[in-house]
Amino acid sequence: MNSLPELSSLIIREATPDDVALMLDLIRELADYEKLTHTLEATEESMREALFGDRPVAEALMAYFDDEPAGYAIFFHSMSTFLGRAGLYLEDIYVRPHLRGRGIGKAMFANIAHIAVQRKCGRMEWQVLRWNQPAIDFYDALGAEAMDGWLTMRLAGESLTNVAKDCADSD
Image 1: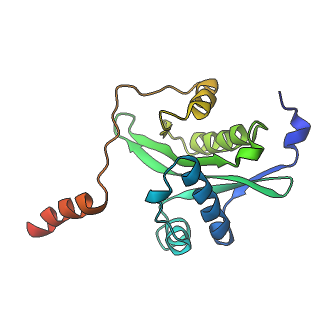
Image 2: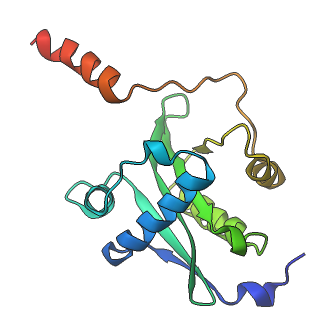
């Protein structure tokens, strides 16, 4: 069990445009951990636009432990028609492997949950890879529920472009 004094050297703050290069390095680490580097297309420019451009689509937090970059989280609002209010979707939460087990992930998660509650969000959601048992155990310990009845669907790349063309063709 980790003591609170160890977390006294933890700083969690909102990301700034100056964090984009470091955040992208951490995203690469996450992609490597998840065996998904072949899907990584993000650039500093695309991340800067997504987080800090004219129409930001997400927000981010940065975590530092003993002044060392420890991790990041990216989240955005979703909408629940059944609740009639916003939700908060956690796209990524990542803590560097050598800093895990110190409460950093839990503290970042608590910060995001606090933001969701402050903004009167009806829920907080995210995805986890089925093979990532350490993450699943972490989420279970927080009281999260697996949504077994739901299947994630995705349109991307050429499929997304083709569906969009169907709309453009009907104009």
